[in-house]
Length: 235
Image 1: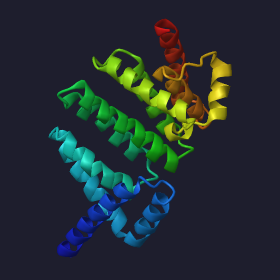
Image 2: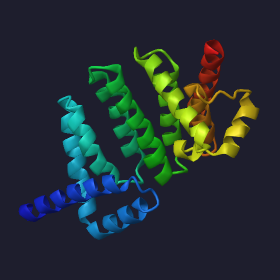
Image 3: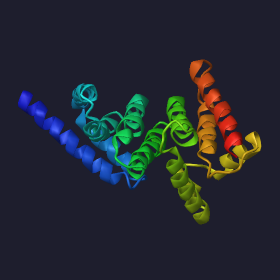
Image 4: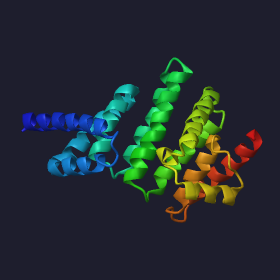
């Protein structure tokens, strides 16, 4: 039985790697993922528990790069569990990035966290306000504020990405809806999308549409308020 379980876990990990490769094709990936997950049957829950146990051990030992690799398996096994995406993105942006030797290296991990939440977590869980909150907060804290000593470079890198999207008229590559962007501009009186604080406002405003009354809704509101203040101060 133990041998069978071990083989099954290895198979799951292998399939997760295949899923990561398929993620460059968004239209095909969800169908692929759901069909493979369904084929796992009861082994899926067992595999997830084992991977979570291993993830906890790696975090306790501070082995964050290995944890990031393992996180891809978690997001594959539990794609509709928002905590998995939040957990994985936090490690990329806050734990792993600060271990990198250069600001350029840090940026790659921070951008990976943004893309993980935006293109993975939110795309598969479009009505979960917590994921919008995590993404908005990431734009505010890591890029918009000066809490990270590499934040200046992050803002320059983001400006390049936004300028490229604007030149190609390809806002969908940033997960943004042009109509919603225009609504945000009108609602908050801001239009400089090269400023990451406006992205923080965009995603927090999206999250408010799904957030019930309570702490999360209040926190989303505070992200918008703080980002507006920082935007006007830096502008």
